[in-house]
Image 1: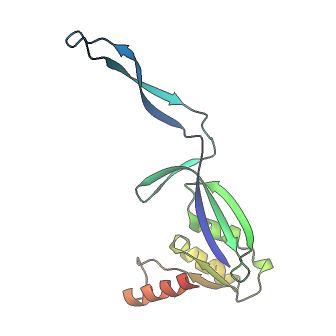
Image 2: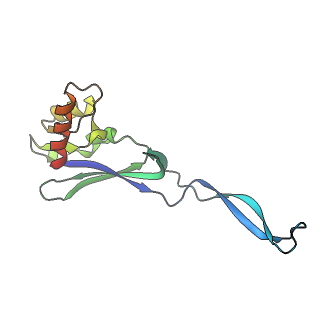
Image 3: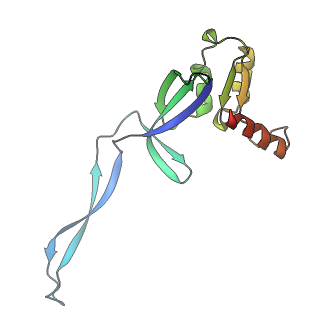
Length: 156
């Protein structure tokens, strides 16, 4: 099983600021040149009450996350849950993986966003094999071993 999340931007952004130019006005110093009066306008749009802000790299997104579980062998989507964009991926693993439908020793692949002791314990308790990529912080593996471990999971 492969677990991952994707970000979807909401069409309704909560608030934006626009600069608009109004009708031309004369310039007493240069009558042959028209100038425009600049007006600042704050536009209130229909705010999507369930969407939330998320910063991914340098980009801020207002929207949702789609958390998905896909069968690795057949590429079939098993489950999808949609949450506000600010929900941490790692908190969704236990609700996405239904151990009653999975045979024991099923591999669960996920990126570093799902790396937590709680998720490791959950998979171990359900007799599932954790193939969650590891973060550098607080990891017993040496840097080279960690890079190799994560690379092997990404290839699968």
